[in-house]
Length: 48
Image (cartoon, rainbow, N blue to C red):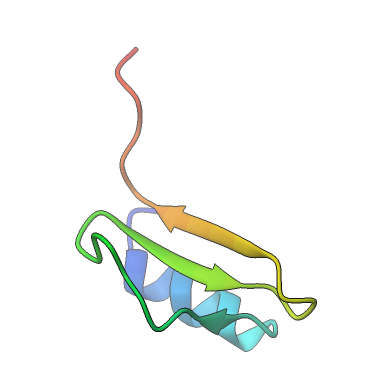
């Protein structure tokens, strides 16, 4: 998915919460799953 906002909205719809601290919100977003485990979403792909 190339749409970071859309991916965040989908994750939140599935029960995730967005972390208050966002170190680089343009490149990735930090969220928490319903159990409180952190994870990140990004549209940045590593070089091949």
